[in-house]
Structures are given as C-alpha cells and as structure tokens.
Picture 1: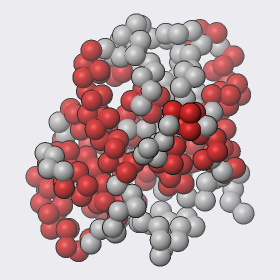
Picture 2: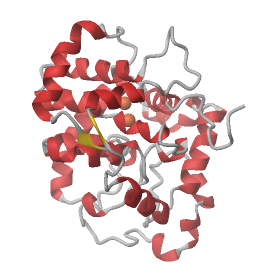
Picture 3: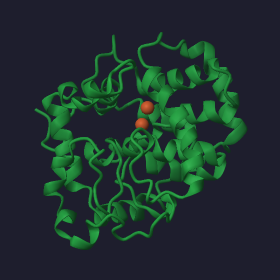
Picture 4: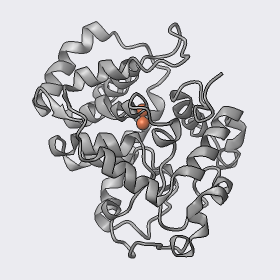
Length: 282
Ligand SMILES: [Fe+2]
Ligand SMILES: [Fe+2]
C-alpha cells in the first residue's frame, strides 16, 4: 500500500485527469461535471492539495527551493534523474517522463513555432523532480491557485478548501487578500509545485513568454477560466496568450506516437546547448 500522502499511483495520473477534464469537443456542461473524470485517488489527491497548500507553506517551500542550492546539473542529467520517477507505471503503455517532454516539444516543433517555444515544451515538467527530493504529491502537481486571498469557484473541488487553515484567517479570504488590485502575478504566491520550481531554475536563460508558459501552465483557473483577472496586470494578460497556446500542446500531445528518442535527440541536444550552459543551478 502507498503511504497516506501518496494517493496517486503515479503523479502523471493528475495530468491524465486534467487532459480528460479538457477533452477536445467537450461541452461546457460536460466540463462542469468534471467529477465523473476523477477516480477516488485523484479526488483524495485534491483533498490533500487543497487542505495543505497554505500561504505559510508556499513561503517556506519557496525559501527552501528558490535559492537553487541543490547543486549544479545539466538539463539532460536532470531529465535522466526525472526518468527514475516510475512509481507503478506500466512500461508498455505509459510514456516515460522524457518521452512526455519530447512528445510535447515535437508537437510544438511540427507546428513551426520558435525554438524557445519548443524548448519550453522540452523542459516544462522537469520540476517534477521535487517528488524525488521527497516532496509529497500534493506539493508537486495539481492545478495551482493563489494563496493568501479568496479561492475562486473556478478551481476544481473548491469544497476541499474548507479544511485549509487559511480558510480560518479572514484577511486571507477577501477578494484581494494580502494583494493589491492588479498588482501583477509576479507578486502573487501560487500554490507550490513543479511549475514554480522549473520557472525559478530556468528563468534567466529563457525569453519571458517561455517563463510564463513554465510558471503558469497548471494555473487552469486563470488560463482556462479567466479567474483572478483582478490580480493580473495588462502585461500578464498579454503573456497569458502564450500560456494558452502552450497548454494545448501539454494537454493534447499525449496519445500521439511514441517519440523516436534516438532519432530526434541530436536536434534537442543542439537546442538545449543554444540556450543553457553545460550545468545550471537546481
Ligand atoms: Fe506540468
Ligand atoms: Fe506536462
């Protein structure tokens, strides 16, 4: 049996739930019925995520990881390390972590997007190494949402916020909470996870559009449902066009053909070395 704080068989079960939630061709009514796509492990995962992600927790994890003091490694070393995250996945049908990254990047490349966009696809989920650092699933994956202000009803399973200690702090439950109107997302703390970590690791090497893609790719309430516009500024609004563009590849590149890793690797080795030095701080 898995430990209590590991409800998902595999962290990618969360990604699969999101992809099912936004299945192409789904009507708005079907979408609102998202609970039918959630099995009991996914539901338990959200219960934990929503009840444990407090403002204090986010600040402590940012202090722990965002100073990037876990050593220097290349992008490829980290990708190999992430590939050791197998849990109980089925090697015959489930994509490895590197395969998911390459599949996303290849779908972007086929559509003729710029190299930095392809690169964003390649690295977007490397932050899931947080699992290998020992973080619980609820601190690595899951839809992200602002902490320190009222929860939007556009977040899935909003009822689980009732058990979040921040729900008992009135100043955190107003519309703006600890933030100012249209202060910009850079000043807003989102629930902690693989998005924020990979953004911090790569930000100095990537154009801003790619930084937004990495940092906000799991912020579905905002990029899919338009929530939290009252905290975003005009620059965020413009940049979210890119987040939305990216999201289609993250959601819908799965299920395509398994990438032929050996054939395409030379292209990606060149791409990575064009943007990143041999080793970066993690
Ligand atoms: Fe992700
Ligand atoms: Fe992904």
